[in-house]
Length: 137
Ligand code: MC0
Image 1 (cartoon, protein in one colour):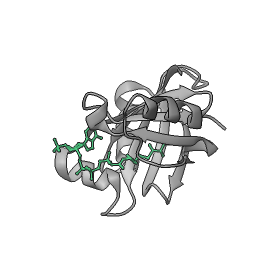
Image 2 (cartoon, rainbow, N blue to C red):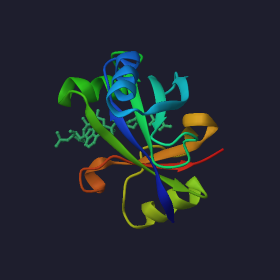
Image 3 (tube, rainbow, N blue to C red):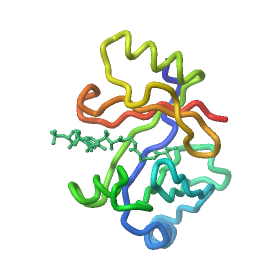
Image 4 (tube, helix red, strand yellow):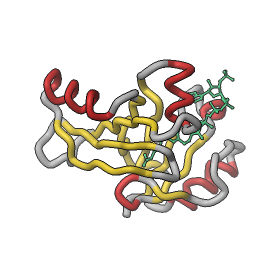
């Protein structure tokens, strides 16, 4: 099952500009940053609390014009792109949702932030929300 909200993902055109905006405007700070070539993103986890154990926001900037985030930005502009839940076992959670008739985007999990294993539910099967399942490393 779903354990908690892992993070909320926001598509941005420029990661450095977005980091400066969240820092200067909301006093949030970066707790993790990486490039994920497979997903075609540069991402930063930002938090309101010093150690980043509370709610986290993931800023997602495209690395390539054919990436999911570039396509999202073209269609919608910047904004909320995904809602991610922590799960204990991403395969088990994916299988349970498949058994309820939902489409998972990947047959087997892929690599997500900080060495996590991830899969996604198609937004058309989840009330218009791109749901990500995250099994932390
Ligand atoms: C598309 N749609 C969305 C959506 N993206 N609805 C809600 N939220 C989104 N983010 C809608 C479209 O408007 C369209 O609706 C319908 O879904 C199907 O669109 P499509 O043309 O078939 O599909 P695409 O090409 O727009 O792709 C959507 C899809 C894609 C979700 C399949 O974005 C994808 O594969 N996402 C998973 C990977 C991902 O998002 N990677 C970036 C984050 P209409 O009504 O017009 O038909 S990487 C990440 O998150 C990692 C690093 C991590 O957290 O660890």
